Image (cartoon, rainbow, N blue to C red; front, top):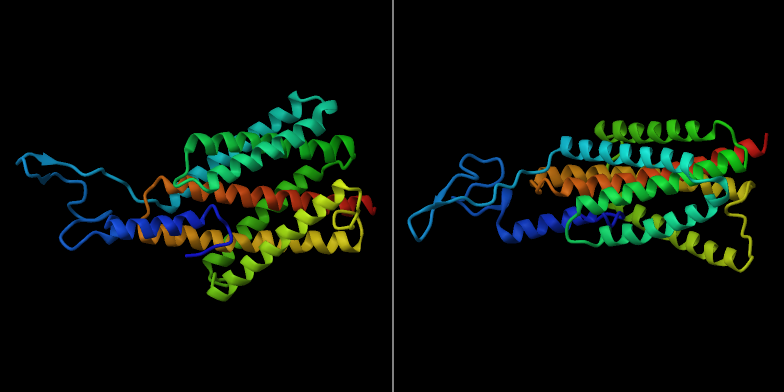
Length: 278
């Protein structure tokens, strides 16, 4: 189960570890796995006394939903608090500080063997500060009134649309689709990184300006960010089918949060372009 999302790819790697260890649905013949009769019940040991293996509950869709809603709530509260508590003069500094801290922490969480709930919650708080400062910048400093609410509604609208399309199997994460998404997302990341470096040296490529190039690039980012949820949904579904432990629901929820923040920022930027042309 490969994916362009390094966070949710941990689910596939975890499944392989569970398979090799013989746990869960991969338990040897005669040994009950997750959800099977007798799993978690005492079994005889060499001393003659019963002992119980660790009762590990498998991850469910509900687990992922609850964790995702929790992280979104924390992010939203943090964004509102940052908007109201951090003065306009410090918006830029708070924006950059939260962005860099979130990037580092996000990479740490992404490459950990398993998600640490405390770190994921801290990441949600930091992302809330980042999102709050970006939103405040576009609204209070650039003067785009109502843009934040529009971006939030559009972000969740796109997310639920992709969820329905995936559930109806109108869009599926086939091997070709997955490979194409990996290539496209890798290319977008490279382009954005190069554009950022050039901007530091005063070179304006027009990718983030209100113009034809900026419009096209933003639309491409929005489409790719939206389609990336199909990969996320597939990874979660496969993780549930394989009976991965419940703790991986934090990993799945973290991955969805990352995608939602990216989509929100791209929609916010495109709406700003549209308002600036009015």
